[in-house]
Length: 70
Image (spheres, rainbow, N blue to C red):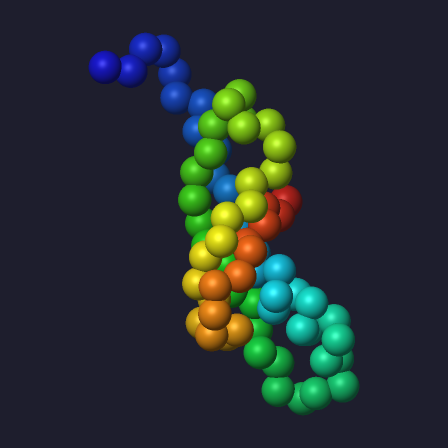
């Protein structure tokens, strides 16, 4: 059983590969897009920004998704 309040907050993870491609390919008309995941984390246990390796359908491979501020 859980004791006390749950401190979990919502976190958005953004694909770092898509962000780099968008910056490098500004002249192209067709944008690849940026893929994002939603998850939760407890800021008391993990105060540093979260980075997970997840699949990005725009890059069509597993890339590092980093936490962004909303």
